[in-house]
Image (cartoon, rainbow, N blue to C red; front, top):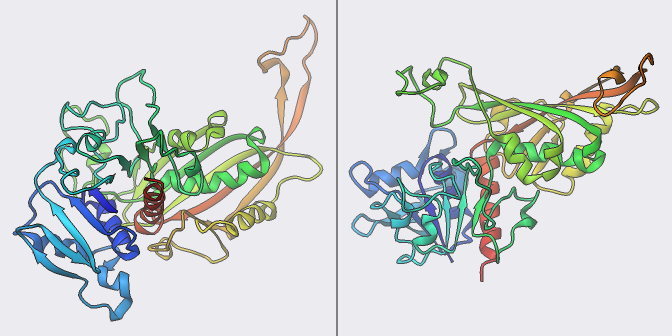
Length: 406
């Protein structure tokens, strides 16, 4: 079976690394949609070298690795990468115009970050994610969360958001043709929340908030530049080399698609970008309704993560003292829990029933004040937002979808 990749940006390039290493697919067809440099040699050089992860040959074979990109044919746009035939398409940018059918590609992963609306018409504008289906693909996967632009439109029945190991069983090959693999942050967050939800239940979690301390992305500026007309967030135009930059994240909304119980919990998600190339951190703060006799302690939180990690390759319960560079390239780790930095504090909060909705008192009656034990917990989860966490898990999900195709 052949695999189609649309785009050779950060996730597209690293997805190619993943699949030529794994060798599940007989061939990879990459749509670049444009010419690069002076030809295929320059495309190969871009694939081979990476500023964050080093050379592809080192990634595949360690320090003894030799040349892994061979048999370049510029006219045909073909090469072999680690023995896997790779074809580079350089003509069409619009998904509906890509020759997936002619190249016998049935499964496509779109990594461009451009086509995120599962309701968009492929015939309008620059195209849409469904254009890949028009071009001959049977299934298309998106390496980003869905984003429906038109207000009031519901998620189509054939579209689903999944995180490998969390809700990939919800994927129905007979029903779903457009699959979002969520985001790197949602992937990490889902593995931080799911063990706690399974243990405590959603009813005991009063509120949750998170901040992702996130490495720079390709959409940010190297140096300050003037904003485009109509821009409202001027921070996006500031240099990521020199600043910590406040931004937004859709992780809370996407998490509700992956773990429906989260929709019943008040949740706030924020993001800050920092001047590193990869390696990110989620700081998760939870408030639990506790029990006076046996309050929640850090040992309990640690044991929950430790037991969950014993049954999945995607969660690591670490006893090390990590820094962000330790996480880079760590295979399959959706989240690395920094166990030594889990903290809990339990206190009783006063709840005046006069201010509780749905509770009424006769005139002259003094409403009682209840004391409710609440435990606040702070949990740190590392993730390699590019190759180690997100791309490797996207690769696992891609293979899982492919294996279910008839």
